[in-house]
Length: 115
Image (tube, rainbow, N blue to C red; front, side, top):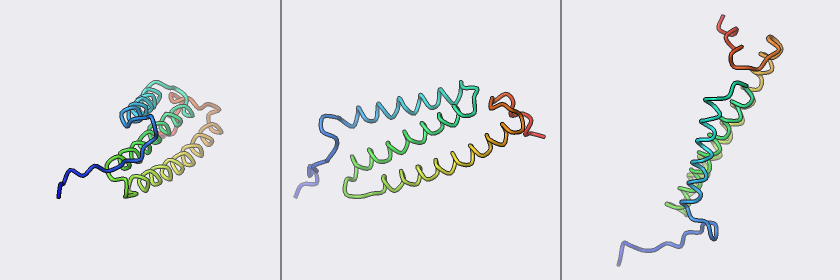
């Protein structure tokens, strides 16, 4: 009996794992770039969402490639999506209160909350 048994991996037809991982890497670094360079809190929040979505896609793709019969990657991605939803709700609530207080959603104006 050979240990090098080839498994039939069901991926997207015509799209390799390298292309999907390249796409998610690009999404991740677009999110990093947006998080570092943006001055508006809403766009910073959108950048964080890009980072989290790219990591959720990576969980699913790598799990599908390595262990297609298990669902741990999908479970982790559901957890990441739930975490992103709660993070978005909390951040939007903070941004709304900050806008009521300062009439601005720029990152340089958030120093008021320190005191």
